Every structure is written in C-alpha cells, then in structure tokens.
Length: 290
Image (cartoon, rainbow, N blue to C red; front, side):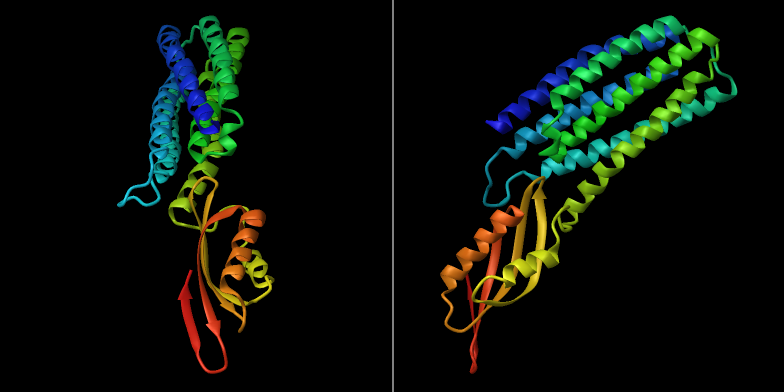
C-alpha cells in the first residue's frame, strides 16, 4: 500500500511539473531571461527525471526471476544516479550561458519574469510537498525530489533576480542568479550521487557499523567468533549480510542461527542474510551451510 502511494506521488509531481514547464519556457523566451530559461531547462530535466523515477519504481515492483534473483531493485539506484548526473550536466550548460552574459548582459523584461518565476515557485513548492517524506525511504524518489528542490531554488533565484532588475535595472543579476542556482544544485545533488555510487559499489550502508554488527553477533550465546563479514544494500533500505560464524561445541545450530537472524533484524534492520556456521571441536572442523 505504501509503495502504491509513493507511485501516485511521483505521478502527481510529474503531471504538475509537465504542465508548468511549457509556461515557463514561453515566459523565458518572451522576457529574455536566462534565469527563467535555466529554470525551464531544469524543469524539463525534472520531467525526464520524474518519468525515469516512475519507470524504475514500477519495474522494481516486478518479481524476481531465475536470472534476476534480486528482481529489478537496482533500477531505482541507477535512476537516482542518472538523475544526479543529469543535474550536473544542466549546471554546466547554465554556467556556460551565464559566462557569456556576464560580458554583455542583455535587457530582461523584469516584471514578466518576476510573475512567471513567482508562479513557478508555487508550482515547485507543491511538487516538493507531494514528494516530501517518501524521499527518506527511496533513493530513487530522493533523486526526483532533488530535481524538484533544485527547481525550487531556481525559482527563488529567478524571483530575487527579477526584483533586483525591476527596482535597480541591474541586469547582471540575471546571470548571477543562474550561477548561484547552479552552485546550490551541485551541493544538493552531491549526496545523491555519492550514495548511489556507494550502493552500486556494495559499500557498507550508511548508518551501519560493521564492527558493531560483528560484536552484536559474537555476543550471542554459542557464537565464539564471526569472520568474513560483508554488509551491503540491494536498494534503498534493503540490507544484505553474509558471514561465517564459529559455533562452540555442543551448540544447537538451528537455535543459534535463529538468534543471529533475530538480532540482525531487530537491531540493524538486516533481513536478507547468508550465514555459514562452522563447528569446531578438538579433533576436527565440520562445515555446514544453513
């Protein structure tokens, strides 16, 4: 039910963004505002990003197959990474055009720009409210939310530039606003890209300490040592663990395994585990897989 609600939020945000994109594009052309055109370009990327996120979200709900035993969860992470890199590409285009305009700032129709940017700000705030909350559970939705947040910052910058030009006639405010917007977008997207790469590289999930996990497992009665411990994420919030646990002589392997799995689930939210128990006595080592 929760996943269906997140899908509906993505769809609603996509519809809102697509409707206003055309208005902002026309407004940017008519007013000759780089800040508005930059914001419209960013909003177009939002449409692509939200569409990609919605596609990945729907694909991730498909069941696992004999060839894709984890299903399609990683598509959500790939979508988040693509969204983050797309933001950087857009910033590069914004910086290039801003550099050109700094040497010869063109005249901008400030009042029209201000009106369009103000409506755009309200649209982005609504889209952000629609997605807020779900971004904490899904890196894919966080990528879409990052686009909307960047657009909101863009609209704030465009409104500020419009006010400055309307009251002072200082047209350098338009490319300057674009640069500031770009820097903010780079800052907000860095965490998204870093976390996406970490998951794809099977790094230890954020918030989990491997040494703490090992200590927690070794504190279970019957476990003498844990080694070859690995923890990674399949997708946002889906943690996987593999390890070897050495069991003291006389221990019941089924009971010990149940205790390990219960502790990993309750304390670290790790539900997907592969644990190999190693039984040791004075004469020989016996290996069994559970």
